[in-house]
Image (cartoon, rainbow, N blue to C red; front, side, top):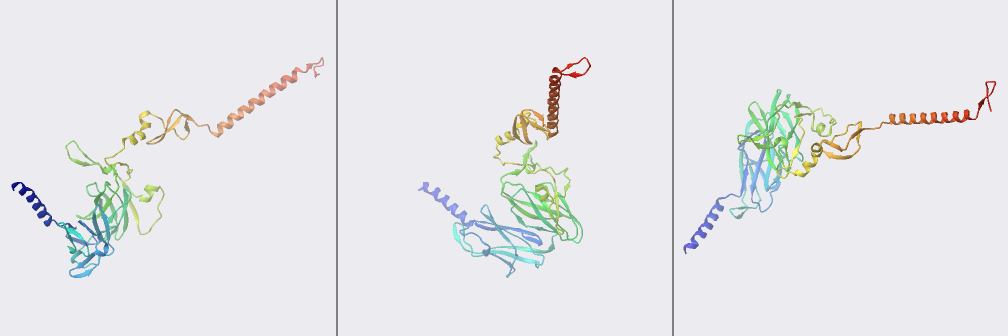
Length: 360
């Protein structure tokens, strides 16, 4: 009898723990300023997928809206994102999920799920758009609009990295370029002015991590970020200029500001292929020269990190002028040989007469 007590006790504890676990939760901040970006994370075990028609907003007991808002699914979780409109009345609000089926404590449930939040009687200093980004590349743009009635200098950057700076005049709108960490993580881009900080959220599903965002363990055992923004100067080139090398069409209402000109070098996350790296370094390892524009390789061209190098010797290219010069000297030589032959044959057939004249 005793040998059955322990398994039964284990099963009872598992059942008891499941009954106290809420398998559907809405995570968000408790309050927001007017114009602030909101991202609410919905996590749980859904029987049917969450769609926009399941999402309702309330002010107290009255229906309201936060259009436009987005719904994204990432790694099994849902993210509801929007920006608080400036015309919203400060007070108590809530998000409610209706008409959903999910598991709660191992039992299928259809109960509504509600999360309350407050809107403060306070405006942000800058409007940040979009509130939630899922870029396809390691760099992307965010649009800033100055809400203050004066010029402001904003510090910004990914959470945990060195900050950059951007200046905006009264009501001015600018684009700033941000580099993401990569590695399938949800990150915050923080914007700080006068002691206040507001976020924009970004999720990068790219597997690679830019080398400037790599972390490593230093000599003291601390985790250190490899970002080096200390000596960077502000670069006013836009995303278009950096990637395509040509000027972007002008827009009078938006000025582009890009800080930092580091080359976006990326490395593979934990699965880096050392064989490809060795192929790129073959020029340096074998001391193969790279031929300049006025020289050419008399051997085999090899692909390297800085371009094609020469497995042989770089020799001077033969220019068209030197070719014509050589041809001219050859022509002169042929004419000279012909003249020597002609006069030799001519004089060999003549003789001097007593009168001093040549005659046959």
